Length: 329
Image 1: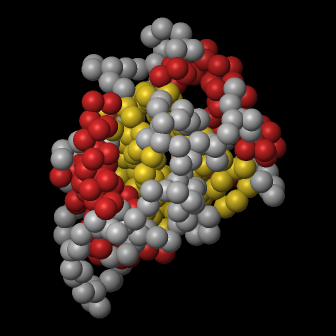
Image 2: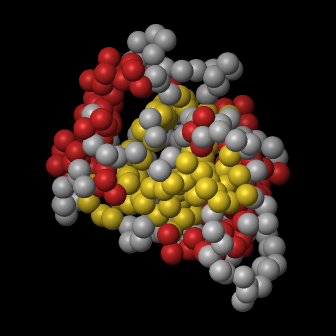
Image 3: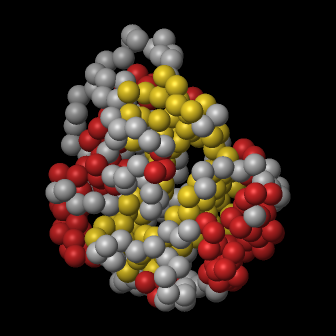
């Protein structure tokens, strides 16, 4: 297995709902006019609380400075697990549960904070740039480490970190944050970039105009319908996460569907904003799912985390996670 360290230097930021109009011009350019920018990594996720943006340094220049824009300190790097050769985004999706024990858990054991972005195509593990030496040291025994430079993969040089590390004792990771499961069912999908112009107006409406400030935040409401939409354009590949109702607004045959056409239910992690320094949140959720062999997409946002699991598995997932949760009390 190869672990690719992508060449993008990333910023993670939050845009307040009431300030989205100030940023709309730049965001539309990044999403729909990418040929007019040098941006290669762009993701925008709307939750009831805010918009989370993950963007490379070229893309970040398209956004105005604003009191409504909060930027996480540190530069982030994206890691991508590739089974066999091929580019990161054309490999088979393997799901966060497939990398829970080989990547997520060891990083948590070494107190390395991660920020996850699952897409239709693959899973990106974001780590702080300053943590990279420790990340490489932690994962080098399991993976062939490769850096992506100008689109080509080259062997990642060892950073000289070879001593001073004690192998951590593997300990149970009880869930310490409240869990909720909104009532919506979600689709994880994609579309051909060539068809993007034909649905650009619709997508802009979904992203910026049809939800918004008037919707009350549903955090803490286990049964409520929540506002959640994610759009990623990464190295030319588009990924979309939206609820089933939103998909019905799209013309037939525009959105890709999996052979099973499966729907996903969400587990939302956090009763209050999680912050960026706590380690092991992704591991707390993904390890029990991996043990149960349940596939999952995982999307971290500025304030909360979100796992998407197959609709038919939601009750067993909640049961397994609640068991893990009670172990923490």
